[in-house]
Image (cartoon, rainbow, N blue to C red):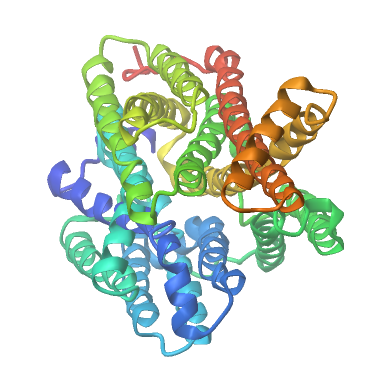
Length: 518
């Protein structure tokens, strides 16, 4: 069987296979965040609150994760190519439903269907590319694959902002349709099932595992999306969600380990490289999504940028990403992939530390260099890290392994995105409490500042009491602003530390060997 796996080569060219997979990958990742900038416009169209509009994003992310673990079962039952075509078609049709939705209920149905179709596109594309490329060229395949999954979330806010501002929010969904049509045609023409991936009829489906998975993912995603505004575990609602999520997660692990035909074959975690590679990439994606979400918040809330300009600020990361791709491509055959990952960790942490020097006087140009550095570091971890992760996984296990890895990565992304609100809110309160202690009449500097500002307001015609209140209000506004700035700075430092702690895991990974028989 192993010999058959090594001898099989796809009939179509690697270029055509790569284009087919990348079209599907790009459009799915693009849709994880492209609708974010249009939420307030959608809320206005459907006469719903901003909080209700968040379900457009939340329900999509939940649906994306639900079908992921069933990828291996669906491929074995229906054939991987057929299932790939079905997912792309469902994604495109549901995108049209979302764009044409006459009310919020139809929009939610469309987003559920879009998530169900889109969730499996990443592991399918990843597995096909890894199987199609020879072992020695797998780093190149992962470089191409990583380009799509890193560029898409960076340019999504820019595209979404432009479409919403110049056309309408409907086009945020319509833009997916041509990508899906092109991907469907390319998959139909150039993707094939390998001979060792046999379609099997009458396989038992793990319904209990699926139910536990849906319960876990659903409660977990809703909890992390709504935790900040509800005060996290101070809220009974979030506590109940957390308890249900924890119980369903533990039950899922227990059931999958004892089930004869599990939805998730957790035996893959016996693979050293897969386990520790998944840890590295999950933390990286969590931190990366956190930094991508945090910068626009800083620019909008602290510097007054609009959504389009804040989205454009993330653009330079794309240049860094492409630079990282070129670095990995050039050094992949001469440099140990573990050393590439180590290089990426150091560079990414430097980018986070550069952002920790933010202040309220920066111009847009001041975020260009740190963004480029983050892009280089992120890609330099993802490309070799993904190659190392799957380097010891057999082709028969590839679809299952890719599904599990992407499921865990989605969890990391959800935690990373929600961490922004938690870190900024928590640290701003800490710094605000610290600074308030300094604002007393016993502080000569503070007292002198209040008196000077009071005099300025009195010069504008205010009476003594009103001028004092205005001066104190202005000082408090500056205090809140400075404490929030300190919170952003601390969040970037925490992200830098979170990446640095991954260094020991790099040395645990086995060295990539393109010719294992030698």
